[in-house]
Length: 568
Image (cartoon, rainbow, N blue to C red; front, side):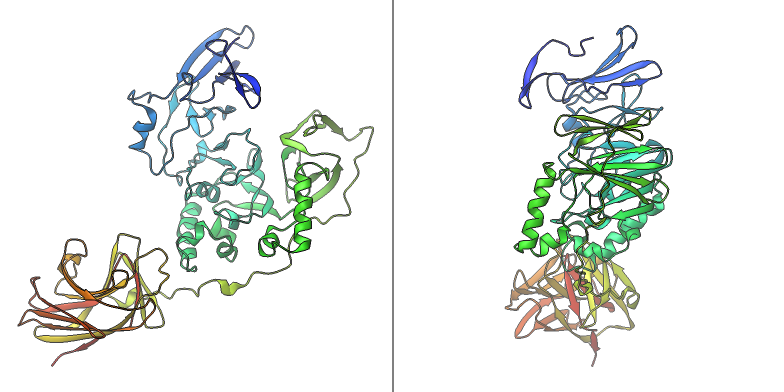
């Protein structure tokens, strides 16, 4: 049966191929063959989903999956640009099909047995519906490149992009290569601290529960915020493996592991299950990447890196490990004279079959004619003995929100001056207010010191003393400094759209500045002084008394001393 619409050839990967190739591993379910022909839904008329009678080859059904939204007829990339967060599009590339008995899966795309795509829309990666979790890879199950941002998952969905590719890997079982049985996932993948944009990767062999709870997903989401607060860098939890190194696994991953073998002296390229054993094969691992990162010019490191490069080419042979499924005990370790191709191992009839990079297929069995040599002269783990310095972390924050009556779109923590006010995110002003014991109706002076550090973790550089009769942003007066704009400002109302006056200021990041604000309600006058710079403005907001005083940051981070209130 010709799955392609016409007999047409193209050059691909240095060979002649059909414009509509079919993967060799077709899916057979309930007496029906299912397969897909094509490369991409955007090319050559799309991908053809086919149902065939396995005995006769008779076509039972065909659905074309192309660049049109099946619901609206719009171009699919435009249709889902409106409903999909970030830059993640619906599945459009072909791959090996899989089936869980309920649905057919093409990567993360759910398909019914008539070829209808279900749930095309890309949803929040935290929605990992247990009954829909399955084995897939966003780059395709045949991709053997170990590209940094890709991995296999046993889950429902994932997203892409610089800040998105890593998220699913923290929420569901993931790895370079995985195997599953009825209850568990077995794999070779990154240690959880390295599921970041990182120059270093360390691996582990693991066994994990298939099911992941929503409670665990929420726990990891919350922990990410706490981890970021221990770093001076913005979004360190997405880019700093060393920051994550100091946190426990339960804060880094929602996956419940049964056992782990950290930093094995082998790099898995093939994985299979057999009875009560896990079989793993690949080239040897010679170096802890932390050492290579710290000492890139060290002669010993350079020699290890050279050996590692040779090992990837198969020049140091390979290893076959046999581990117990129950607890990960290493039962045996055998030497191979070559390395397997990616995912090139299968178990059948009491034998292990290994497809190798030099074009052979090895058949291994207990009563075989030639016994494999056991590996006894190499370590089981490759671990650099240099520990990391825990002082790399910022001290834990001490929350101070409870010192205030109203905290809006920010958090307040303890700092050297007294209070650090941190906006929740860029483009969001934050306010922390205390209610005065006695409202002010006449003349009053507020005095505090303010300092804005240079590194504000991606936020702006400003800090304001605020006061008002009502604890609402648009009815508060803000008096303070903007270091990037180099001015002293009085803002009446919201930062965006409020009335303001300012004067130039020369100040350094981290400099502690004296901030003095005098308000004369009867005369409707505001005076703000910072050093030798003074700004005056008539009070234009409706305000008969001052009942609240505190701090504000315009999408920024700033430190303040407690406010002193002086009345005649």
